Length: 525
Image (tube, rainbow, N blue to C red; front, top):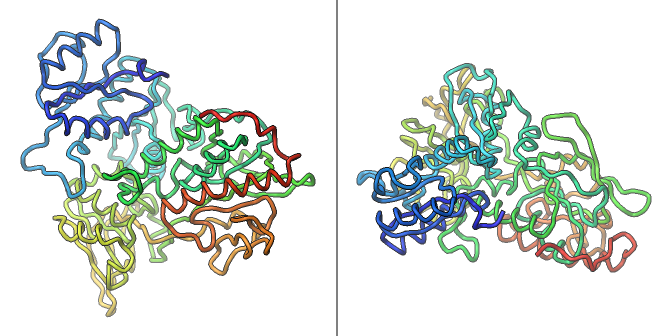
């Protein structure tokens, strides 16, 4: 859909610098669904609304410091105030308009339903502490779907109801079914590709884009939503070219949009189960639909493994029993507003944990970061440590770990243990665990050589001295990003490896031209 045909969000602010910054932020949230139109004060907003009405352009919302004149053009449009209350100052590192997101999501969902806009939106109902409801919200949020969350006081096993923008209602849908109904999956265009990328994080999407730019047909097989662990990060502030930072979800959606523009086929909610060499020198990638037993496969001349890492697991009693019912791995950003008035606990000492703690501190009564070590700066960037130290309501407990998670159906408390063995119990409804990562390689079943920690060996450590850069122990299978042994665990490094592996793919194609399609076929740029 061309930008001019998109429904409009009118942004009215007499301050041109603030207006431009806010417009960039709002447009990043809704780039594929809405167009942000910037205007000055209330009088300009009224003129713009009249012009849009004359042109029969749908207006989904108006963001303004001052409300336009009542009635007139688009009388049913929803108005949301830009300004915060005087006692509600932005948190450190937060753009003043970020508080709008939840209210704007809710308003746009209502507009889409009322106007039958046909956008991929959703309304989710269920218990806040339902594991199934959490999985749905987490997937929708990281997939860039606009949704409204309506928690219901019920048991955690109550059905999860998802009402889509077209009025379709689903009860306890699998993630695969939800993705298909929302149009997030397009049917695979072929059975054989030049390159199959397994994993849709920064490294995988980068490899896909650069391989497609070299004229290769590419499919990305991702077990969940775009972005990997980085996709759930509330803020990435050290990524080159984004001086004010961006969310992990924003980076993931930008990368996915770029990949699709390059004609990369995107297959989310497909869980890879095996990579098997064929008798012709190609490779078969087998996978199942998430939440089902439905299996399928594709073949490819070359494969790029970019499955990244999973969160390390807590071994304390009660963790597994309360998983996604008060105890969560990673941090679902859409959960943050639900913690208003509550005391939130997080485990971790890396940048992801620090960013999550800062984000939830905007909403929760308090956030406590539990760190086993004695120096937060040993594993967290200095700028985050300084920001945490000056954020009200956010405290760090060094030398402290979770000894037990308490509660029946939901989390009610934590037993904490200090380095000297002393223990105490605190009340808690939410515990978010962000403690490093373990390589996502168990699914390989020994097909590739791994190092002693389970990361994929590449280059001379994988296939030997004649291996191409980032080639594994199986010729034609490459690895990039956090899953690769010796990689630097940073988003920028993963993107760089994805770009670099494209040159290895070009060389591999030169050596085996019969396995690849005609390289003169242009990509979609």
